[in-house]
Amino acid sequence: MLTVLCERPGSLVAQERERPVRGPDDVLLRVRRVGVCGTDLHIFTGNQPYLAYPRVMGHELSGTVEEADAASGLAPGDPVYVMPYLSCGRCIACRQGKTNCCTAIQVLGVHRDGAMTELLAVPAAFVHKAEGITLDQAAMLEFLAIGAHAVRRGEVAAGQRVLVAGAGPIGLAAMLFAALRGARVVALDARRDRLDVALAHLGIAAAVEVGDGDEAELARLSDGEHYDVVFDATGNPKAMERGFRFVAHGGRYVLVSIVQGSISFSDPEFHKREATLLASRNATTEDFETVLAAMRAGRVPDAALATHRLALADVPAQFPRLLDPAEHVIKAIVEC
Image (cartoon, rainbow, N blue to C red; front, side):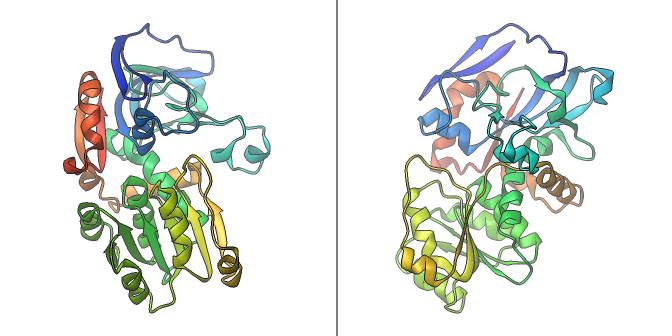
């Protein structure tokens, strides 16, 4: 079977591998779609803190069932999506229902080989029927669920002022689900093209381009009171530190980004505002169900977000262009 391997930063190769053998509790999937995530771009550029090379990337996937035990409730040909966070079910986090931060988590495409291949064996507990959605939509569930999880972590409520810094796919997902909760959402990013997408398709109130005067504009848009909830989805430590300035008194700051190293903030300002700082990692079944419901209701502009397509065999040659801002990539989907 054809498989694309990231041997080391900057190096992708297509190779033939043996067909996987399905374990007793596994489902064998024929991979149909793979979404390219910021995590994959970070793996390619060598900036992913949880990864050892070589690695088969890909954790946003949909497929069809090749083989499954009858007890799984799945049958050959069923269209499915996969929750790619393989959790242990026993640790302190799992016992609290926080499977997204399991202490022994194995994320497909990060801790173990992922979906940029033709066939993949996955534990049946993490494979779900993709009912009422397309294979493209099923492959986009995961990144949207990360945004939905962040919004749930931030306890966004109707009428609140929300700022989302970073208009990549995860930031756009956070904007969408905050807006669906009735918040007044402002986007902040250095790329005008992504801000325009957010304004056109996500129901946000305003967009501010990073540059001279952006802080004054953010203050104006919040009547000088700043934001009830601020999300950082930039993946930039300086931007993450800067975001503390925009949190309102009594507000919450949700870090969806992850970077290597440390970030710092002004403790007097943090205490003066009695701010709440939250991390948001991955997503849970509840968040996937939130996205599924929104998709089935036609409230997710997935066609506008899926901007690029490429075939699995073309990934080694075409992948570097996905990093080029001139390509205006939001979500690229690999077809297998």
